[in-house]
Image (cartoon, rainbow, N blue to C red; front, side, top):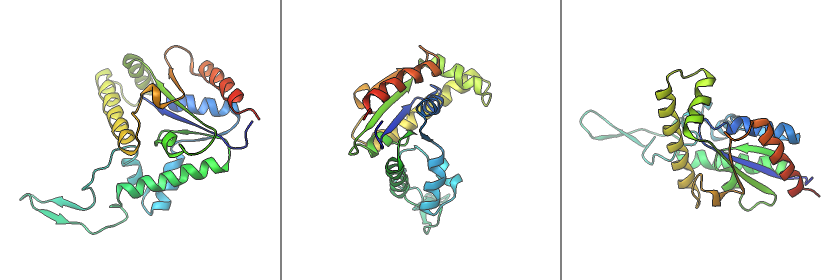
Length: 209
């Protein structure tokens, strides 16, 4: 296998993309990164991890952190603090970490436009995981955090809109468009473990020395 390669995974909310990423990384015996990126990026950008997570994979709010409106509708300026860092700084910090992770060795990176960030690197394989909405709702409910199917459906739609806006803003591609990835996977067709084994074989062949 190549000394350096990365597998990036875009995913619909509730499709099992994170589980697929972890399973694929385990199958290949390589590093896996998802929320870990947030911790390091937050430190590098000089902010709390909590703030970073609230802005994770959300399209820029250009006026956020610059001013707010009082009850009379007039803006009042807020001087920059660790919690008013710009969206571009957030994105650059995370992108720097993604490139550094690639340089460290083989890895799976979930979300955060990693496919676009690594577009100029060799040996990058891009995957998008999706599923019918009803299947995503079932998976969300199975997590136990949401028990109302209608709320789970709303959560999926809202999160997908945020991820799509974020991806489409920072890249010249379209989130979820098959042309933007090497492979797209409907996670409802096969168990995650089986799908990961199939893709692992594809990866091994592609990145064989």
